Image 1 (spheres, one colour):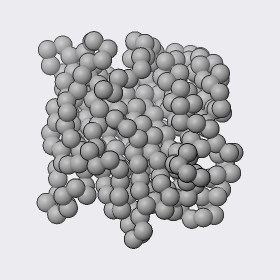
Image 2 (cartoon, rainbow, N blue to C red; image 1 turned 90 degrees about the horizontal axis):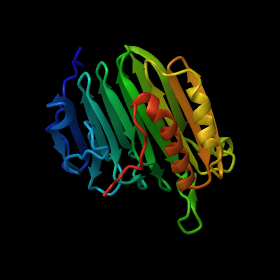
Image 3 (cartoon, helix red, strand yellow; image 1 turned 30 degrees about the horizontal axis):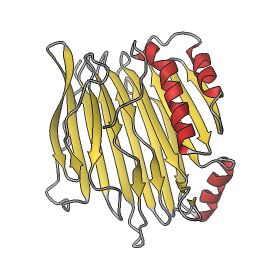
Image 4 (cartoon, rainbow, N blue to C red; image 1 turned 30 degrees about the vertical axis):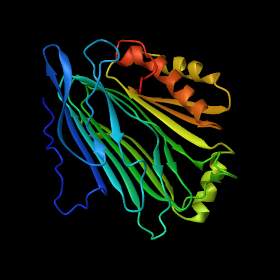
Amino acid sequence: MEPRVAPIQPDPEWIVGKYALMTVRARGRQGRTEIDPLCWRIPFQWQGYHYQDHDDQPFMLLVNSGGGFVEGDVSHFHGVLEPGTRALFTTTASSKFYKCPGGAVSREIVDLHAGEDALLEFCPDEAIPFARSRVHRINRIVLEPSSRLFATDMVSAGRVHYGAGEVFLFHHLVSEFRITVGGRLVALDRLMATERETIGALERLWQGRRHMAQAFAYAPDLPPGVEDGVHEAIAGVDGTEAGVTRIGNLVIVRILSHETWQAHEALFNTWRALRPAIAHKNARPILKC
């Protein structure tokens, strides 16, 4: 059954340049998936997609020409995959959240809906909250029981190598990742650090590491023991600590790392271990040029 999701349209009251919107729909045509841009608003830019795997699955890069979020900025990416389609979405760079001296919050919102027998892969770059930033991020993914998913999320503690470092100096960070399958909530991860006390607690929980990454994988026929292969694939990455959890046909991976590249390598190893079972093909580094 096709997802009955109305595309999000721009509000005429939005200030130009402050609310980035991209609404797309993946449709099956002539034996492959094509992505239609239903509407977009600057600073999001539509630059098409490509077929990196040389098959029927398009890869789309989200291009936000704003360069980062200043106080009160909002970006909203909304995508729907029709039944039987396959698409991968990624970003061109990290999401940078700049200082908010006036107290307003910057927001990054992602809403993705995958229809029956659709494959959704969502692999964005990390979010970096700069010193004195106020950030609210939310990722909402809606699946059918026959859908397939691989998605990642990563948050850094700040500009780790800038000057003396801007580690855990943001003022407000709320980051949520939500997955529903067949109308049932199966995963809800919520990070809330909105005061100095809770930000300090987060720093202690990360145990000296500066990056937290997660991966979520779902398939109706996820083979037994696949989570063990994921654990083996990420165990040898230097500077990381990771755990793998399986609940039914959902696998959740959590990663803490000292350096950005270490988290990226652990996420790619996770994708490499899981993609054959989810997408029935091997993982290759995503080209972003």
